[in-house]
Image 1 (tube, rainbow, N blue to C red):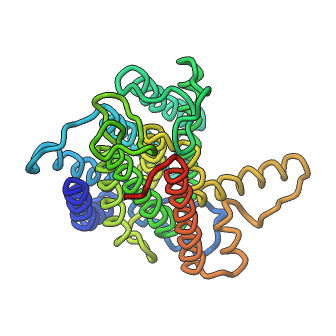
Image 2: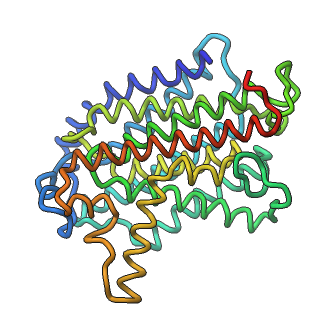
Length: 357
């Protein structure tokens, strides 16, 4: 528990202190956000706001994780699963960074091509999948709150499944990142759930003195405590960034942050065996993604738009909701989804024979 608190505190401090330094540095170098012309007029005034702030989130999260393992008393051992979560975060952050940099260099709102971004996400997913299969010895199938029996996959199918998980989550967070603090605020809530899940699984590991009928089975040498530490570091770093990203934002995370955050959630879900539960915990991201899918499908098939504009948060903005109102209400929806997801997690534990002690 101490390691979790240290990781969160270190990452939070770096987020609070590092973000204003990044704001000044990025502004001095002209690394400002470009705004799509089809977005509401209120967004056009944000042109030039420093972007790529996701780099601060990544640095803070990695630093918080490393401090616990390298410098704290009673150092917690590294685990393959924890390392793979961090590697996935950094790889997808790098893809987002290139995308953001190309937007700024070319002075347009489009960076990497769809094919290039797809390839970057696929590379990160392959690294994660191979590491999970050969190194971390993760469950090689599909999970909801625990591994679903009879769903174990062959390596190629497993890698495809991991790619779908990574791509869906990173793109979902990316689509949500369209208003000041919307993605970062909701991410603090969702990743906090993984702090709880990882710690709860650690306290109820099979084969420990606290062994119960509802205990959780993990590969030898793995510990969900390390996953809770990663999640706590990401939570703290994102909260520190949110301090400066809350409306009116002084810096944006860009694709650097949104892809890294989404990839972190996908990796945490993979190693905690909560892959399908992530769709509940991250319900806001599912809604944002579905709004885009529905809009595109409706326009191509029926030549009609369901929403005034997609993703759906911009639809409400064009419906004359103030931006801050949209953000707060979507934060509430994200919080309700997290609460419901954690309720399902705990109910399953009790149903499996756990006592809740």
